[in-house]
Length: 94
Image (cartoon, rainbow, N blue to C red):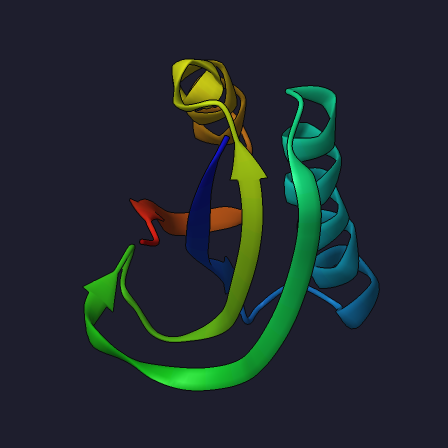
């Protein structure tokens, strides 16, 4: 198992409850795909480097986890259909 981290941005136009639901969706998706040691760190509202869907701010969240790399395509497939996520990036953390 390797260490990974996912940085994702949730829309700031969502309510606080909807933001937490989006964060829980990512955590649950990771755990369902076999991720271990899932830890989430909320960075909060920040200005985006460039507009995404005509929005200038986003709610940033960083989650670290351990997973077999062959399962990442399954995770990405599920994250792509979630409309509350504006962007995400998964990187290997050595």
